[in-house]
Image (cartoon, rainbow, N blue to C red):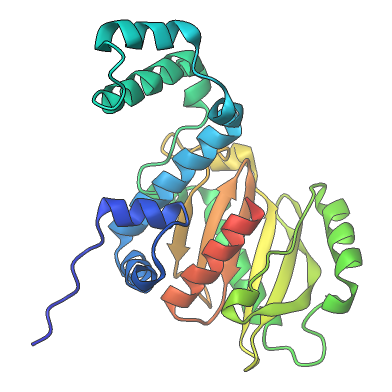
Length: 274
């Protein structure tokens, strides 16, 4: 009898989040993320923490270690960096945390397991709209989009202007999906956009984007701020989707696809658009 595969280790999950996981391990880890909500929530939180720190203090990655801190470490450890590397790293993290301060860190807090997002009315409605828009337009043979991929530059400029935000078409070609085109759609808080992709068999997937109503999303005390970034799976509506929020802007990849493939496409889009 075949035993179930062991869950991925934290080291493997960290490597997957950083894009450093060995190719022979990637499929197993992505399968575990797709089938286990707890594992998916863990990597979503790590994605959020990493991206928030990079947005806030990316310049620190290349900055020299402050001389007072270097001196203190040398005096306390006798200059033995090889032996005390772990302690030095811990002190550096403590230094950075103190420098950031509670007020700055609070605005980038990470949602617990992403479950709170599902209770935010604005986001729940956004994800449902993404699913419905896919179900309406993906089956179309003659008019699936308003502007075809042959006019991609015009499409992006037009939708960026209507949504009042610079947009970008993610590259999903590594999974066999190419751009069909896109269209403008209405939303509760203004214009929204849909980009459609398809593979060689004609199977289609859509990326739905638009601004969320921050007041609605934060009306409940359990709902997170729309400045948070989360990455979650939704099965409500005509088709499933993976979705995330970044600084009040929502993204949803929707399609009648197996969950693991939808996850791969969402991950490609997330990395490209972030």
